[in-house]
Amino acid sequence: MATTCVPDATAEAHGAIREFMAARTGRPPWPDEQDEYELLLAWAAALRERPTT
Image (cartoon, rainbow, N blue to C red; front, side, top):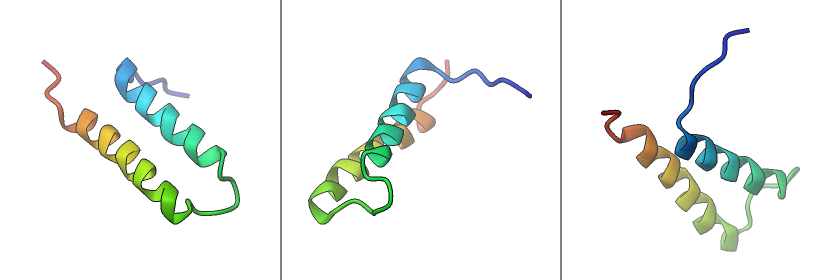
């Protein structure tokens, strides 16, 4: 099994998304939770797009 190196901030963002979804197992986010979910996704996307140098 190959291991990958994930920057701490990216791992934190992905962990927050996993926690968010785990709390809602078996159902999609309710409308009032959708904004929070979209912010988490935007955070992860911003981290992916940042320069690595």
